[in-house]
Length: 246
Figure 1 (cartoon, rainbow, N blue to C red):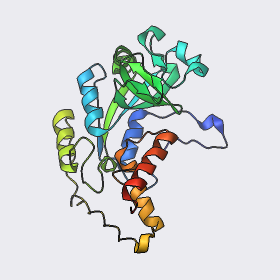
Figure 2 (cartoon, rainbow, N blue to C red):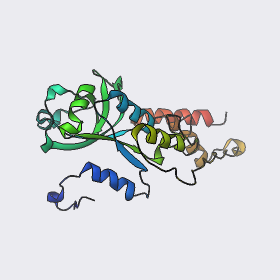
Figure 3 (cartoon, one colour):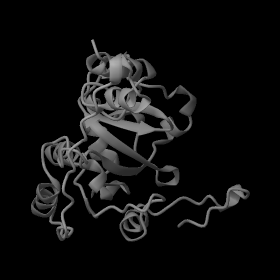
């Protein structure tokens, strides 16, 4: 999409976020899936940003990193707070990030000291305060924010998103609130009930059964999509313990 060639670092010239958003709808991802649509989100409207994350899972965000942050990237760690005190956005430092939560109390095991968006960038989770979101991600500052609709947000077993909406409801919310115009895919995918694992013979457990218990609703299936290794192991163990024959 961008002309980047791994053997030639000079070809890394960045990406226009709008071109990128359209590419994910028209061409899609390596697994063949595509976003159903996207619309811009008003970064200065806290309620609109929160609604987009709650109902659709995440927002895509782009901005010019203030020089004070760009010149001191080695200081960025999990739980770092970026606020307007860092200075104005600088369009020479274009960067795209994403947010999957807001007003969290912890980032992994790190206590959070400010309210704002939970943002993933460079393999870490930082907090950008609401004031900085409004200042840096508004179009007037050269930034932007978008909400996307993807069928991957729908649980294939329940047929619903974590917010409780099925695909038709998700599209209706997108069209109504953000002014989108996504036609309902036809036919609407019907959730397939999960098969009931057969009773293990004489106390024996198959690998497939153990995997189903570890990843099922009492195990990893009960978690959000960002986990520490310890959390993942604990959830998998809980699923195995719940399913294992007494």
